[in-house]
Length: 242
Image (spheres, rainbow, N blue to C red):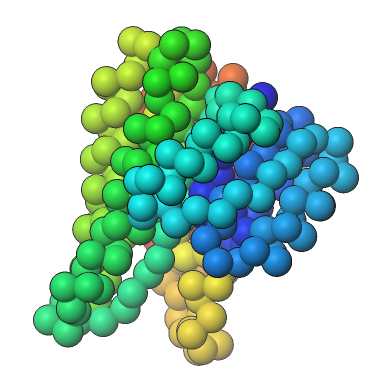
């Protein structure tokens, strides 16, 4: 079994990679710029007795995505599970955003999901087997002030997930999404201790998520335990959005 995880050099992607490796999957670790972290992760994964490959690609570029998928197939095998995790965030007023800001956000968070799905689906459809798990966001469900572009891109991921599940379900391919709440990753680096405390107060479980919390949900959706689940958005947010 082989899984390709985009944006996997750190955070949620790295946690997913570790989880899949422990479950016996060969793992392709996609990264864009964090080569050292990706290579270090690959060495860690190989200690689990699986094959692992670090593969560089800017997933907002369709040509690079095609080349990445072909390399993974050559070096570790057909991709049975795709986890579309790569993404960026941006905080600020919509009126302050430039055209370039908007394009970078939508290309990285939404177009990349389209490109990666398109690249892996033909083989999955031929095999009548495959799983795609997209990483959305609770802000894609309800929207966030000062994160309009991010919210829009993640809402697009949710819409794509639901529509694609209907399209490829008859071909034996399942498509779902995990919708994280506030998770302690690099995206939280600019938040002060007071900000973090306030976010905990807003969360019914009075705690914030970890990358492993999200990875657990991804692994569940990729497993046979979820064989009758497709087109669903699994919210993992501590109750902040219900």
